[in-house]
Length: 335
Image 1 (cartoon, rainbow, N blue to C red):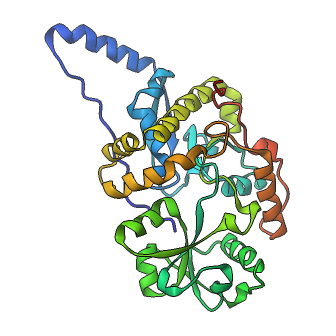
Image 2 (image 1 turned 30 degrees about the horizontal axis):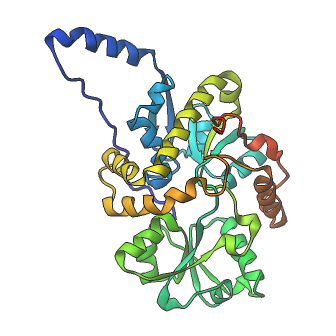
């Protein structure tokens, strides 16, 4: 499900002018030097989950908040590790991984929900005739070998009296969804906003079994913006400034998805432009959805998912959900 797609592309700011503009360039350089340098590490290769970050960068929202932000890829270490170790001030993470990290006393915190509801689900080519969890029986599921996968499959299947032991769970390795379903699997776990939209563009009809259609406890926040407890303690003003800019970035992506898509394509030209535009159109109303403001999180969502993980034997102990997330760095909602 998760495959690095290459390196991130830096955007270089080219300063124009000469002669009489030397003073302007000097002033600009001084202003650049006064910005606080921080980084945000992505969870994955750049995609429309991250558009708000690129919009904030391109439209100067970070600079307005006094920040010089570097958007980077996690490499082998992973975003959570880089944020927890202080090698990156901010990251893109998931509620499920932050919950697991905090059980291990890794003090990372979610400071904003990128998407308000879980848009993931189990996808299959239409000809496989997999329309509900009951239909998983006798089929091959392609995954990446995490215990969480079998637990989620079982949760959905139990709602229809089906047996997860009748599913052949296969490790997909480096294969993408489209390659794997033509090779040796029947269905896989995808985010519709990217792989589902790509299927539409390819003209390949798929059936989706969404997690949220079968369990409220699986309507968790994925992905989220993260930081560390240490960062919150030592520099809360920078966290507040960062989230003010990021909020503006996602609000802009909500209001102007076509412009936001163009910004992402400009920043990462190797991306499929048509896919980015269609994905951005699909995601725009889902970033905030029914929340009073972009990024806001509810304690009950964190509690429900932790309870589910405990029930499935995926956690060694409970976590204090009130310490796992915070809304305090989101801008106040305007009346």
